[in-house]
Length: 347
Image (cartoon, rainbow, N blue to C red; front, side, top):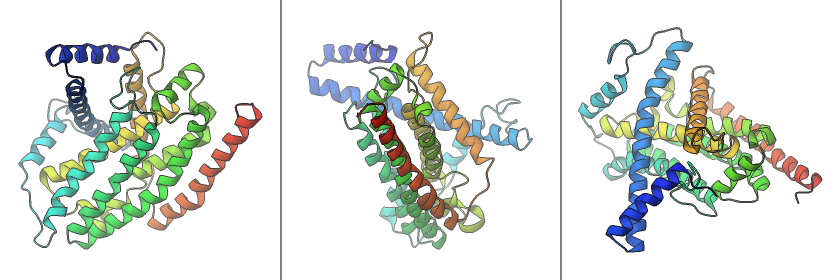
């Protein structure tokens, strides 16, 4: 495989570290920490940019101007002002809260939201954890995100928070199944659980969005539900349960919940890019990581558009739609994929 721009940078950095400390274990450890630091920086910057973009998209759809005070007529510094405001807010812990669990919940929520990025191939050879069972590990890590919501809702000693925590458990369990089944067809066509193999398969043939259109639609709906965004934002339905599990949080603890939401939004977009849009593959006049970023941003904008287009649905409607519509359709897609592979002689 031809070495990518990011891969060349990684090899150069590894060689520089090895020249200083010629111990393979130490070199791997340093490269891991550098990769984690870069990923955290990208996630933080993406959250800042996406908050501004979402406000502008909302304003456009609602025929408003949006942020236009802080940082000039376009309000470019509004996210920075919001961050400074959150940093200056008082951190209040409810009197009847379970202090340890309540304090751990925001931090634990951000860990799986950030850790999943270690498995994505952003370019040829540019992946932090290139493992043969990347798909399994990806969903094993991302599946842990439901626990901190429940912890925060329970530990807050607030009925609204607890109801929000229970809602997200039911919602995420309901939509995890169709999400996994929608990607199973892609794995069947690729014959591998390695994410880079999935991208290479699309680079050598065609994007899976054309070969698996039903799977893409199911994935998109389930991914929006997994990120708790409208029309599936029952966890923090203001008119019913205020802010759900976030009700008793303020300041930087609330900011971690907020940051995790946009990290999960970006994760959903990157999943769609990797499994259905060819990942980093694209015409050679741009580097692979640029194509990857453009596709991911396009998916983020699409999901944001959903938020300001569809109304919020009821709890029973969401659960019924997940179990009675998406799950059967996703299983049907797996069977159709298997039949198609048999007819064309792949199996």
